[in-house]
Length: 527
Image 1 (cartoon, rainbow, N blue to C red):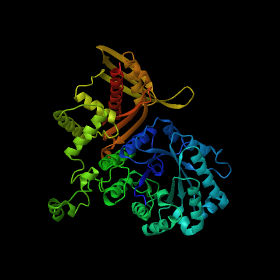
Image 2 (tube, helix red, strand yellow):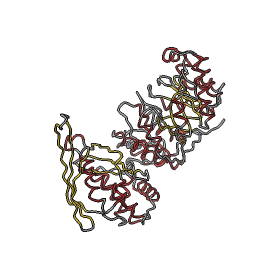
Image 3 (cartoon, rainbow, N blue to C red):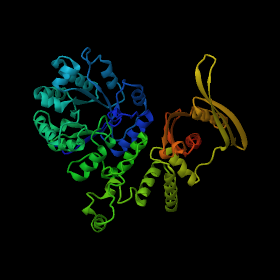
Image 4 (spheres, one colour):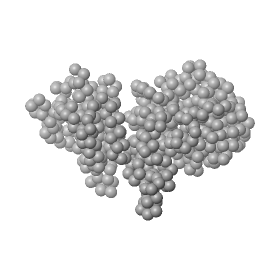
């Protein structure tokens, strides 16, 4: 039997079902790049045609090195053919290389939830898979409610998944949709399923309602499935999904199964976990397995002395294998390694003394609240300034931003923002006024109005996303504010910058400054 496990991430779709989670397009782009760097086999980007965000995401230029971009949706509807179903065609016609469709595999769900003929449901599955395959996209079938459906009516559940397999599905994924199945049940049912569908074509999609999603996934793999679905940090509706951050190192270091993820890539799991937490503006779980700050911490006493003499006494794995360390999350050495890796991607050469100095600056900045994992443009500006590779393109003298809330001539209540700014460019003082939809937009408008005569390419710079995080909520209105801004230019190049300040407008200006500096550095470099 094939020993390789293929990993399927559904953070961008299943994870977005989490209450309170609403990814922007830029959020999705940050996450998909991190997943592709890790080496995930399939990344489910969302449901094209279902909402504007997913439509915009699939319209982006998405260049993946390791992963297959996957579109998610449903089978054809009962009232239409597969070839003429608008929803199915939106998946097939997307930029995705694989298409994952879900369909009911529970007789109870077909009768009670869908209210359609049970044989029509089987035809919907088979015809949809055939249509995807005939359009040269890799078909994946998510058998929704499979395990409870199997327990309700075994023959019908098997008939549904067999129709998908016989029609050419690369993967038939068995879904524990309500998360109520236990590991021994998963193992026994999968063993029976393998009698009719080879394990090399079977997958598992486990929800975490009994806190067994990772255990259920491992049980299914041990029973023979070779495709596993999950999300970063176990994100997902209700209690979440199988946590890939825990599953991946468990597979690689605790079992004899193979994956396409390189062992050295496992070291970036803490960073990827942190990226998602920062996007969601939630604190990191310090006790998260493998990647948490306390995952390899040992309090005083017998444990501390024991681990010093023999680390394996209280540590089930060498922390460095997963990018963690004993007592502290990131050591000086791992920080240096991560820094060099990023600088290599940016084509920045650096010597040993410069490395130490930049590491010191970054540690200081991070203590102030900066986080460069999702703001690589600001990181690059910081490094290039320290290496004297980038200059100040202008000098800010002052700015003032005001908001006015009033009734307009039509009797409508409106709020308008106005920014006044003074800058010096090429020894010339420029003063401008900008009007905007909010103070940040007004400030950005006034600043670019002042600079555009000297730097015409700024005409094509747009702020595409804006996100605010409060770092010290206990201080109330005096809290430190972290601002992330995503920018895009005429080449559809996107980058993210960061600003920190107790004043939200000042933090926003700092992020805008880095965005403009990044744009001008590359524009002028190409001249």
